Length: 135
Length: 193
Image (cartoon, rainbow over all chains, first blue to last red; front, side, top):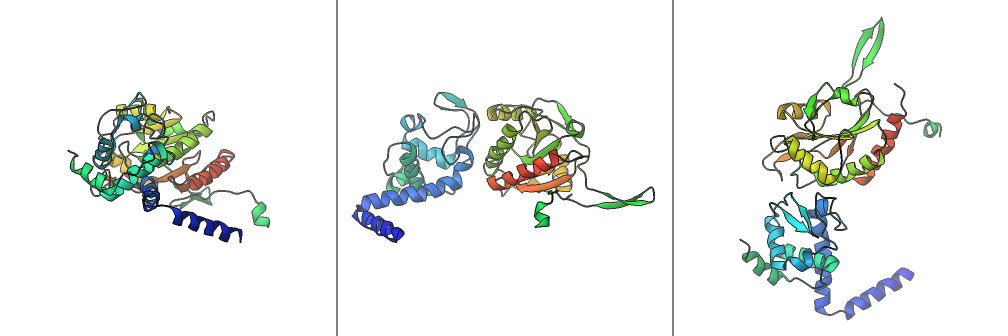
């Protein structure tokens, strides 16, 4: 009974949400799955990174310093050579993710922003446009 | 009920042979053969360095984009847990020795904040590494251009006893499997030769 109550409360709440909010939640949920599949191996589920080998994503200056445009290209094309996170230099490289399409990247960036950056949707159209600007 | 109360012992994995010793039939268990590879400090490491040690072996490469980071996260748990136990070792073989030179392994180990001889990262002749992986540790390790990163390999952790017998193989990407490995490792530590 308790669960039915909670569930109906959830449904009511959900129905109160605007279309934008529902889309945002969808992006976050999908993005979390994509993060687990493509990123968490190295950056860990909680975004803490792995010692000095793989940089953290949570609580880092990345979200202030790196634009979403740069973030999109970094995810799609990978990274070679040094990158500084919170002032510490990481030397390794990050593999490219050629299989991730604009919608995946939009969801992934939305999830990461929701967890560690500004809680703001990164739309499919924005991702599509940004991908065109990657070299 | 009785079986549950018995002290657990681990099987001997791999091909067995029987031979006659002084008129008695004796079983000869599969054993990791002699080997010699360079570690992350450019020091030769051989089976002699593992005498009387229980060790966990795995195969990886430093530029691996897929399962290796997960495996290393799990090996770190073992490393930390047995940091002060001289009877436990970790041996990670690179399957990409062309790229993973001792200096590359050194930087990798340093960034992972781990040290030899507790955790040896080994590199050397590619054919010998693959042969050791497939024939001795009974896991897959080979080049494959179609795989992400260019190599196909299993995420297995191989548990080896003090006489270099393989006593367990676990999925090194799964936390609960590695919990199981740690339980088994404790059994091996208490085993009398």
